[in-house]
Image (cartoon, rainbow, N blue to C red; front, side, top):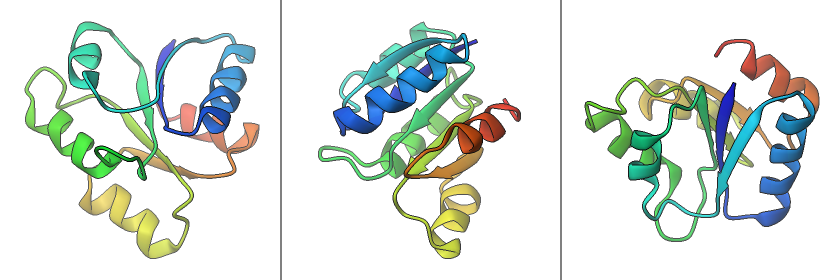
Length: 118
């Protein structure tokens, strides 16, 4: 499968990309949401793994863009965030519209569990 990892932290991004590649997946990565809607529209990603807290546009706003575009409305999105309270996780899935949610620091187990649903 092919995944897109979007995170402004180069350390977190590299770590997640490395885990996915070790699992045998193809991975693209981005450090921000600039021109990201076009990239998601052009590529066929099994899922987008998306950080919430980013400088220019947060993950919530980008997810709203994805969901409002007919070409990307059904894109599977996994939020990956340091926001970990049950209220924040619930908001990310039920209100913001992510398909799944994993918290940082990401472990191979949490990533594998999230990918089983893709």
